[in-house]
Length: 365
Image 1 (cartoon, rainbow, N blue to C red):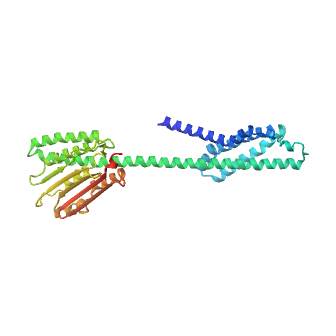
Image 2 (image 1 turned 90 degrees about the vertical axis):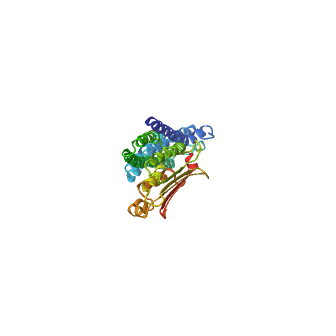
Image 3 (image 1 turned 30 degrees about the horizontal axis):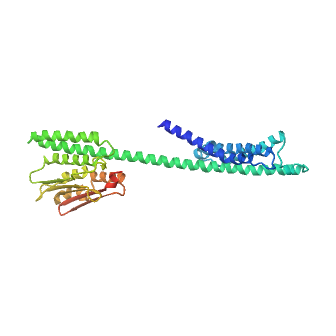
């Protein structure tokens, strides 16, 4: 990763230098092939000035803007440094040309009578023209560098959001897995006293479920068919501890496309809640689980009976099912499938119902 970032930075640096050089040198290169009556000295001078334009650009882009604006936010110092740099170059270049043969003049002015005032006018014209070009070079470097920094900030924010999202999902899974294990061990503990053989089978089934949790649920997504198989085995495990008067129904689709994937243990919370909040003291206790993939949606509908007394003492049911488990699944759905899901919960007439719907398109990305 570090090597990739380093190569990316080197590539970006080379691109900036190449484009800035092309921008400033292109007029000089064209002038070489299009010299009419202008002396060669003008072409040489334009090439030299293009070099200084590029130097002003690179100095601002790689030194002045990062050090004085981005890191220290010292605009007065930045403007003073640019003024000094531009004045130094504009003062040095004419003097250098004067000491090496004088400023070049066009051929049609070659015979004109030289005077001090004319010479000063040429000098001032040079300073104004090339000073403005250097100011534009500094402004271009300023705009490009700040644009690049804004892009870097945006990219870092996206990376931080992705990391934060991954941490949140891991935290939600960490809350869910111990909850499932705790409930399952309680079920097996309840069976040991009066049905040791059933407890032994339940322990074997639990080991299969934990194997799925440890090895498969560590992935971001799992095939939907595996998740449904996990739910079926979990229901069979929970069936062992139910009284004979409880009606338990679990319907799952026969054929699930292999390219459909879902976040692991997403459906488990709804199923767990049904067993947790089931009240066997009512007239006809039941749990109904129906999973389908028709109509372009994965639909998981879980219903269970509960008594009014259970409703009053259980804050999860009393608040419409907004307990820790459902709060977790709502958070996961919002992170993983924004705008492509719905989770509805109702609790009326002794029946609590939760219906989760996720677009199949969101599960095949």
